[in-house]
Image (tube, rainbow, N blue to C red; front, top):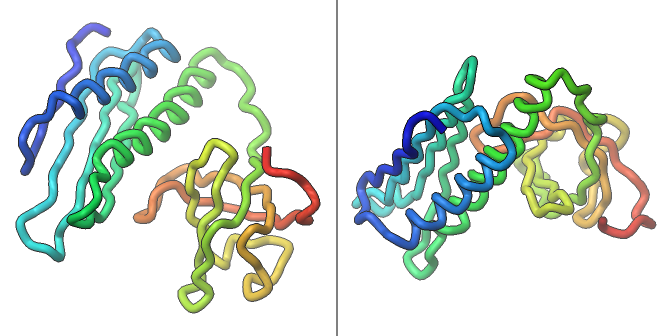
Length: 188
């Protein structure tokens, strides 16, 4: 990397443990792509108001061409320390995006875009749900992207194939298509 990694804390005390976790994840990113030019990670702590008690992380990866930017924000609860979880989730997304970018730079053909997952949460009154990949990535989907089944008939635990949307939504990674499978296959 041409410039040193910048780690910034906003609305929270700097933490050696969180900084070390960020540096470990960053080292993993550098193993996937050796042409990273710069990096910046901003951790923003919870605001003083209870209704704004969130933890946010923004990862900016400087690469040749447009930067790769990943933003994650999660609501916190007083009794739980979610900071490591939010950092892990954001870096998993950044790693996936960096791998895709590296494949495009090398001119490699992208693997098939249908990915296996399982429905883990449904909110039928609000017309959406979440699927989880074998790598434990949670992906949002709306009833409009279900292609071969009636949304009202979906059940938690049902297995699906999905395609990931190019952009993240307000709920994080989201599916652009979901196809329901039978339930006789084991989780990979």
